[in-house]
Image (cartoon, rainbow over all chains, first blue to last red; front, side, top):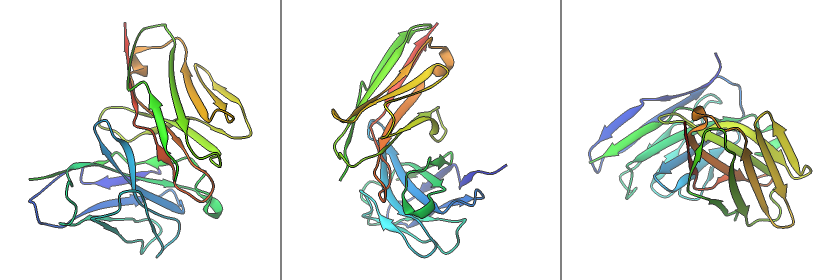
Length: 116
Length: 111
């Protein structure tokens, strides 16, 4: 079945350590996205990418980094500079022909990161 | 940039009643308005979407209405069932920008 796989489902790290969240899709979608979800805050955009080797900052990119070396993969690194990294992280993809970003998003089931 | 406000934050209804969730957006250039449903521990799933050239769209018990003049759109669920209980998110964007989401509405349907 086609879909988006995020791993692991739960991740625990010590403060001061960088951590990388995995996101892989086999939908042949062009665009990929990272959102952060906190209770009562909805989904806030961290980074998004339309094509390989290109990505744009979202509303809350500070303390995060991404790469897009392959169409299928869009890993997110939470760096030690992120002040409040504990959250639920969601990866998504969309067909996004032509860079319109007006196509439905397909989400993975998320990674819950806890930093202590 | 775009800002999306969603109300109410929580909504409780009896099984069989209707539920309405409302969103307003700030950018008059926005032209795509999807709604997502998120069940506990899972990622959101698209349930219905509408584009700016349409005023209303319906899919079985779910409908969305769009008022571009007032910059608001609403989700209507009729004949609610316990399995409709979830968190619902509205979103908006214009061509060339990523979706911006509202803060979500937790819907509880009691039998």
